[in-house]
Length: 114
Length: 112
Figure (cartoon, rainbow over the protein chains, first blue to last red):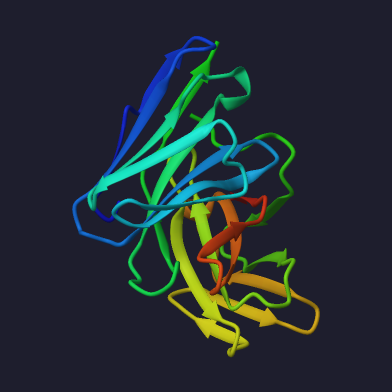
């Protein structure tokens, strides 16, 4: 898994509650990404980071925020979870320092919002 | 848990045959392409990549072909094995966006 750890692996929460997912890497890579995966949609980019405190939106960023205060940690927060955010969330890192090539993915977090 | 739904295109092949998985990409300005394999309950795993200045690249038992004229990418797996059963995704990148965009995937089923 290229030194990527996602936590928690599974979470069940209620609508309206805040949720934070954590991605931790051990190899000091610059680029980190959060994707969600849903049936029929494949992997869709939520947010990504190109350095400490440097983040940008992906194609499905509404309802999500991210933070990167350290190189090794990239946090994804659902401020007020909704049932439409039930999904599998994957964190990824890029081994390239210049471009978003060859992403390596974590094992995923299964989130259920009831 | 299961990461993809029931309505993926499915390719069924016999063990030992060659498999060809196809992908149509959306943007003629895309610079870089990549194939991933995803087994049930796991994250996507890198297989092979190719830049837009190439039309073919080979790896171990896999070959990626790129046809920029028709915006088509294919993954060929030689001598398909049961362990190749998975969902396969293509992805495209435009370097000025730093964002890798994924297709919806194809399920490969290998039967004895």
